[in-house]
Length: 164
Image (cartoon, rainbow, N blue to C red; front, side):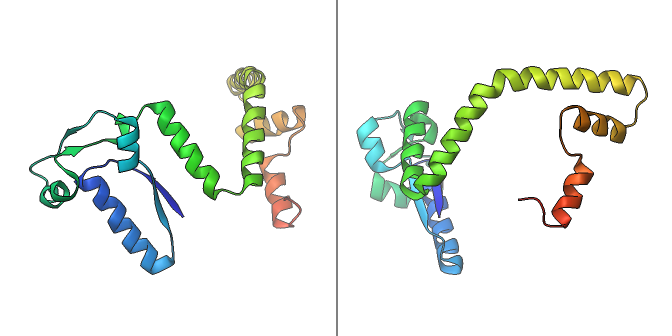
């Protein structure tokens, strides 16, 4: 499934129609417009602009929708966020969303600590580079110091099917 957000103008509608046609017939992919829709335009009344008279698709568009067009940016960011979130909640399995929200919350809580740790490690790497230590040795030292597996060890375990 493809969730689409795009302009409500001759090109934006065409993109949707072409993508839906091309993908649906060849791969059974569904295509759903999350924003901007005519219902959202009527509900939120975002600012519009005149349709581009030089666009070859203008005549058909004007006959069906009138002479005004709306860009996706005309929807307020928080409103757009809510529309996208609502659309995702309709199609993404609830357990996946629960896990994603938990990971997002954990990352937010950890961010101040991880940022300080990142800066500390970068300073340490810089000091080791200035001392002439090779990159592989620096990585091995950091992996040992912070209780991490080296990249080579991860690859070795993955090759043996030991990593999840």
